[in-house]
Length: 295
Image 1 (cartoon, rainbow, N blue to C red):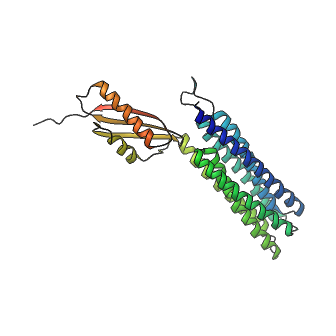
Image 2: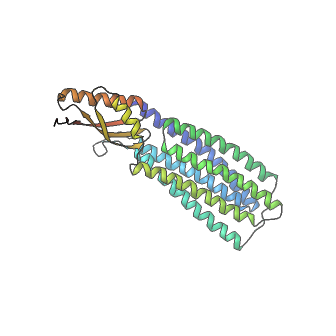
Image 3: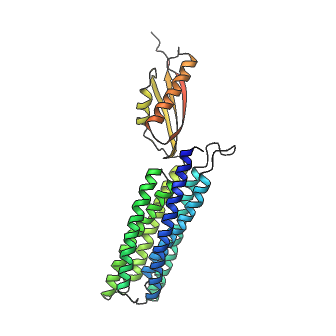
């Protein structure tokens, strides 16, 4: 592993640790007030924040494995483990969604009027402010470090912000004399969590299933800029944003010497790597361009 890669993984680990501490502080505040007031909306939001912390731990485990260098059994490295553990975060979210829906159904059958006070509002406003800061920080770091774990976790936190706003709305409706809205808000929270889980699962599966990651036209334009390249086709790209693999076929003159063709393949690789950050592997297949026969 290069020093830059080691620094990247270390930075991701530090971000996850900071976010973990903030998420659990927010979760604890919400759960304590939710239990003391019998307000399921706030408790649900608190357990969602707690799941944020659990996802941070999953992320830390994933990063620890992903930072391992390439070896005999993993010649391409272990980076996809970061993406794989993003799916684990999605699975955790789906489980939390199920738990919240079960609680909401129970509240519909056995309604409880929560005791709402000014403390509830204060806690929610403070936690929303913290979540917004955490979301922006984690998203920015995720994009900068090209980290699936951080980007996935920031999506999770973003849903937390909207959920917290919905809880404040529930508090207002309850004060107006509509306690039935408490389990309704809990159901809405579950839907938000399910949506976040689906988004993370879709993005992670695209990487693991080798979905296209770069525009073919962009690659073709770069390749055709290399001298003596006649044409380019069968372009395929896959991988993560920080570990992109490219393979393609290029056509050159059939009279070209093998040594020169080999040199062109290296030039193509260098051109693509220089123009597109994140490309780590380029495989170039050289083919002769058939001459047109004169009739």
